[in-house]
Amino acid sequence: MSTPDFKRIVLKISGEALSGEQGYGIDPKFIKSIADQVKAVHDLGIEIAIVVGGGNIWRGKVGSEVGMDRANADYMGMLATVMNSLALQDSLENYGVETRVQTSIEMRQVAEPYIRRKAMRHLEKKRVVIFAGGTGNPYFSTDTTAALRAAEIEADVILMAKNNVDGVYSDDPKLNSDAFKYHELSFMEVLNEGLGVMDSTASSLCMDNDIALIVFSIMEEGNIKRVVTGEEIGTIIRRKSE
Ligand code: UDP
Image (cartoon, rainbow, N blue to C red; front, side):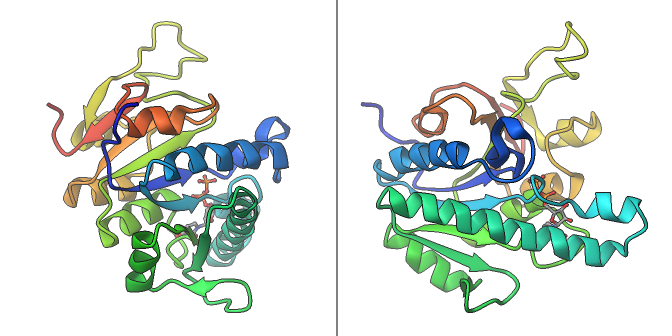
């Protein structure tokens, strides 16, 4: 068996990955498949923190486009990530994986508040920690949350699990048959070429703090384990491409 390349990871799962084919809400079948993949990585002894998005339920931008106050709409999005986080916790615990949800907006009846040192202690004890509620601030994204938390907990890498693409492409592969997949990129290239990997705040944070990011598809069973054991299946983004 290949040995893991990382000791501590942040796994970013977009909300859409939880909705499966229905495209909205939570599909228990998909959550189960993600939990199954996370368990396989947990069994390798890797410390896992997860940031879940909320786009399968609500995006702040959509609300503001129809006239809502942007900050209010964003808070709704942050609450959506809490629902997803609880669903994922439930599924992971069904597999016997001890899990803690920490929210950036306090809701103590539901989950622990985010406390960095406590999160790190949970990770050392091999509990999976799910960071819910994004950064707790409007105008940000859960990609930025992943970059921020990765820096805070000193993670080795961010694994950006995608449900609709298996890496970073030069153009939309569904629209342009000449589009090719990058094997490796620097954050500067991502920013300069406007590649749709993550928002620019998240990319800058990764670049400034020297956090590596691997973009890959979560739709194929076993892919999270493939990535952590060094299989080159997606696109790796670093401060400087080698
Ligand atoms: N959000 C926010 N601040 C954060 C993280 C998220 O305001 O720090 C809101 C924002 O409205 C966003 C929504 O939560 O649209 C859902 O998060 P995101 O779009 O990142 O989810 P994903 O696309 O990963 O499913």
